[in-house]
Image (cartoon, rainbow, N blue to C red):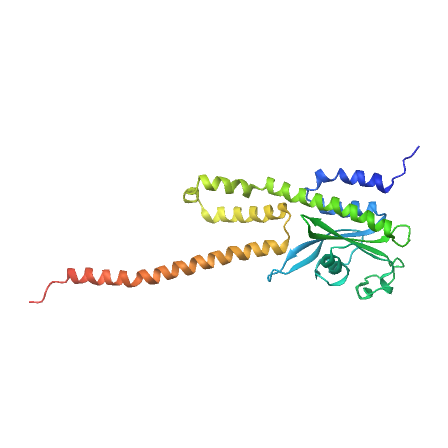
Length: 265
């Protein structure tokens, strides 16, 4: 006798994914499993990031089902659209019919008769770190409050999975290990051969490790900008030091020349 896959059974299966959340496709699997639990054809997971002005934004990092390419390029600020409303309020949202709601301008699929959708915040340590968006029920029906409550439960598990993913990334990061070694071997860099080759290897490792930790393109660019800023500051300090030392060197050279010049008779 076949066992009917109930939402509760799907939740139990979801719990088994927590240990696997650190894989490269971990976020994708979270989106896919969320869609399966809600019996929907589409689900997107948006994660929080900061722009150059330290303003919070949310961007799609994983999805299940068809999603317009532009959706991966858009960034939503608090209060903007459905996801922005959920991010600002911290409350899950049920939209029975998007074309008859205040969010009609956010509708993407005019030809899809299924106009109902759900959106719920993903939290960690009390802060909203992501948004789960679910739409297109497989049975074609409108989502209801039971579905919304189920998504809120799923969002709790997704938050835990993301936390585990980040912790696993940090524990697996070679940079964390190298940071500890650096404390004991501060002069190691002086003995490294071919510094240009070493720099390229470190740069590639840096990029891979930041991806492994779970950081997105914006955070990686910000990190690279920070390195450039630190280098620029170092060059400015070095230039100022040379400017201060130049007059002293010139005076010393003049004195040396004067000492070697024979006196006039």
